[in-house]
Length: 179
Image (cartoon, rainbow, N blue to C red; front, side, top):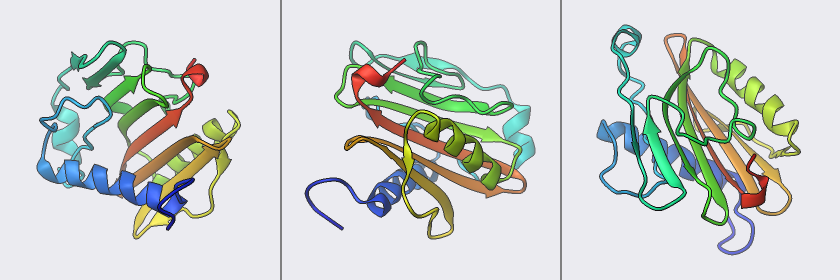
């Protein structure tokens, strides 16, 4: 692992997976107002309880241009950059277009295998000029990193449980890349 320069793929994946797992272990939204923190839903809940209750929708703006939403895509979410997989449900989303790099995050669930989720997003990101970084897991977690140019990155991590996949996507891109 390098301490300076471009982050190594394994480091990016470990950070993304660690953050998602830490947040899901806490059982809810973090108390900080940092717009880039998006909680991952706990994957140990039975699928029937997660799908039978309506999702609450809330939105916040800690700073102008930064916002987060639970249960829906935040207004202005760059769906051309990070599209929502068909038939997926949004657990949470965030978008900070004023930071440099701009940050986008999406947590979703779908009744599909982890491989199908990774395949969908690999196609979506490579079509935008992102290159796959070697490696496809961190431990037992499906995780894939993408790089465009020298400093635009995307990570997708997917946990599959009982035929339901929960995915977390984090993207850091040049503000001019947001469409």
